[in-house]
Length: 250
Image 1 (tube, helix red, strand yellow):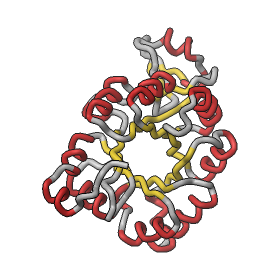
Image 2 (image 1 turned 90 degrees about the vertical axis):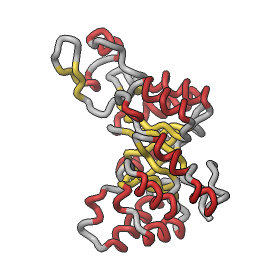
Image 3 (image 1 turned 180 degrees about the vertical axis):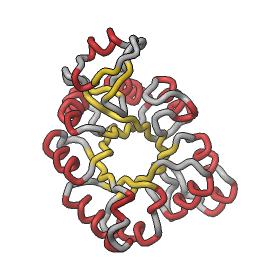
């Protein structure tokens, strides 16, 4: 019988702004297992939390995160940008894990340098990596585990079974410990294939309790959500507790 999936809080969880300490603190207060956020790198190689390269400055103009140093960004913004180092310090203090959703390959080496300097390779893993990025990550961030991101559209050109086999094969070839994919794609056939391949399966981004229940019963390894309180409530439901007495967090 499967253990309950790891609970991953998506950046911006519980209605707080994306890439904010408020979102992080809300997740940690709830007791989630993993916190996920988007990672980019400044011109001077500082990993920061950001989804897009374009960033709004205090005067209303738009700047490029990759073309500005951390000092220039913080001078030009109304509020300092959140650095990965500051977040990792809180993750370490809380004894949790962090999913680093890499938005650009240029962030791989700075992230690896920071994580290794902080001694946190066992507390983080990479996502956001297609096959090419996952292979690059094996060179630039070899000490950090990684997930292969599977695009939902990749299941449109092949049969479901063929798409599943290709995803598993790509993950193994790229040295990934699992696959990361939209929850809508997950079916029993996929679960059987990833288990045969000794891969983990992480799914995103789930909002509805019924979907959370279905995915938990299928046996996914982690569910990412912006509403971790709802997922925690699903875990604690009486029926689930009775039917799955060993559903505990690893």
